[in-house]
Each structure stands twice: as structure tokens, then as C-alpha cells.
Amino acid sequence: MNFKKPKFWDLKKPNLLTYLLSPLTLLVKLNNLNLNLAHKKKFNEIKTICVGNVYLGGTGKTPTTLKIYELLKKTNLKIVTGKKFYSDHKDEQIILESKSKLIALDNRINIIEKAIDDDFDLIIFDDGLQEKKIDYNIKFVCFDAQNWIGNGYLIPSGPLREGIESLKKYDGVFLKHNSINSDTINISSIISKINPNIKIFNSYVTIKNKNKFDLANKYLIFSSIGNPSSFKDMLIKNDFKIIEEIVFPDHYHYRSDDINKILDKAEKIGAKIITTEKDFVKISDEYKNNINFIEIELNIPNEEELINFINSKIYETN
Image 1 (tube, rainbow, N blue to C red):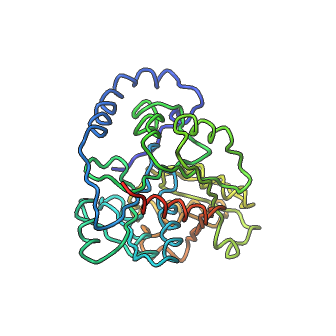
Image 2 (image 1 turned 90 degrees about the vertical axis):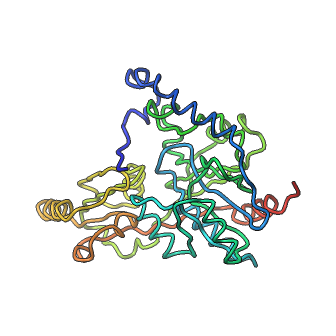
């Protein structure tokens, strides 16, 4: 499903539309009640980690999954990533497949069983906190610190799949920033009040291939991601001159007509074109010579503390 996030979701205060849609959140509440009451299975043959969110899209699940994979690869564990297959999420699957060992099937139970058959010790799921059938060993929730929980309301009144009080049942939080110097004391305080036992890890993104770009140029950017403002803000903070931005719905499937319009627009305004890595993998090869992508790197300042936390959780006695 292609989805473009409504702007009112991230207002600091709810507006009239938020209140008008609030009766429809009952369906989400009922689904979450079912989720909490469902009987979930824990697998003894393999350890499981889930990196998910309660805020719909744009929280950095895939980069965080890959960062955990990279860190744990340094241990003696045999690790694989897992992703439930959705036809409109092939961008994330392609990136996971290129940077990790990946099992992608249409059922998460089948993914785990495949990982067990292939003799893996641990599987890291990109998304799946709302899975009704699996009791993961570790459950991480990702947030973009800039948007945090938006207006704080459930879908469709706001951007939340689950209320913020759901943090009581999770093990850890990742707060993603566009800068190492971002201040998250207030957010961390809110999280700790809800769940004093939850572990909070800050992370920040840097541009891995910045030296490939001439910052004297003007740029047109386009994306179809959950949080396009985060992409734009990161580029501006890194001194890119953004003169035009085109935003498509999340996981949008680009047609030739879309790309040709972008190329024509860039030529008219004298700009180079930049997109995200997730968007670049969806573009036909015939256009890629005229479009560049930003490769980001997720950094976690306290990596050793994260590794120790994961080890303590996956090896704890039940």
C-alpha cells in the first residue's frame, strides 16, 4: 500500500481533524487488545530479536537492524536477518539482502523455521513488533527523535500503531537523530517514566558517501520514505543546497513518467538530483546515471553497552 503521511499527524497539538477521526481509533485499540491477549510462541532452537516501531514509518528500522547485524557479526554467533515479504516493500528487502544474510518469506513463523533448518543461532527481524504469534527474546522500538510520537494519537487520528504506554512491554528503545549533538533528555525522561527498566540507545546518522558530492551544486531531492523531512534536514545540516523537493507516498513504485518529470524539472532549474538509497534501488537502470543517492551510516555511541545488553537478554534464564 502506498501511503503519504498526513502533516497533521506530527503537529505538537491535535487539531480538529484529529478529534473527528478519533472514533475510528477504536478499531486499532481492539486490534491491540487482541495482540496483547494472543498466545505467542518462544523458540528454544534459536534466539530472536525484533526491531520495530509503534510510530508508522520513518523511524530507521532497517538501518538499525543492519547495525545490530554488523555488531553481532563480530561475535561467534551465526546470524541472519528476517523480513516478512510484502510486494510493496521490496526496497527494504533489496537493501537487507545486499548488506546481510536475509530470509524473506510471507510468514514470520516460516522465516524462523527456515533459519533453524539452516542452523542459524540468531535472527534479527526488520519489523514485526505487532506480530501475534511470536514471543521474541528481545523487542526494540525505534523512534525518530525529531518526530517522536507526533500528536500522540492512534491511527488514523495520529501516527501511532500502539499507544506510548505500550513501551511497558518492550525491552529497548532506539532514538534516531540527524546529529550526534541532539538533545533527547526530555524524550528519555518520558520513556523512563513509562518503563523504568527499558534500555534507551541513542543513534545518529551520517552520510557515508558525502565526498562524492560537490556542495557548490544546487540539488533537487525526491523520496518515497516514511519521514521525508528527516532526509531533507540531514542534507541541509550537511551543507547541501536544496532548491526543490518532491515527495511521493511511502514505498512508491516509480514509473518512467515519474522519473522523466524529475529529470525535466532538474534540468529546468539547473539542479543535480539526489534521492535515498531505498528509492534508488527502485529506479530503472536506464535512469541511474543521472541520479545520485545518499548512503547513510547509523552510528551508536555506546556500541559495547548495546552488545552487552543483547547478550544479557538472549542468554537470560526464563
